[in-house]
Length: 121
Image (cartoon, rainbow, N blue to C red):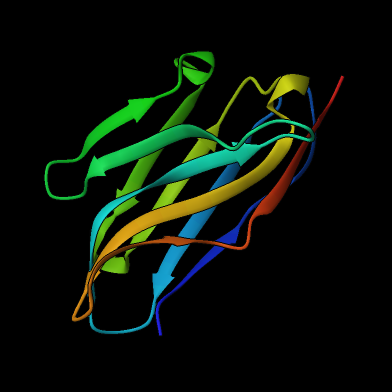
């Protein structure tokens, strides 16, 4: 069974930094794409940053985090990281790892359980 497990959330003051990690665990899969999404109270879940192709390393970011957040991967460990710098109160949300994985059942999208990030002003 494939699982995405996130870690690294917490409470930080504005201007601070946090690093999120997400590991895809299990067996019999390969990773097509892997990234981070967030959902603030009363808002829809939005894409934050994604490695759109694990093979090429191509990345995409939502405009509000460009220059502040950086996504990276460790392909051998099926892990993706999100380094978040210069955090703002509006970055407060539950951050979810999402990944498109290829298994013997085909391509499917998986979600992690989410990790809370709270930025105080």
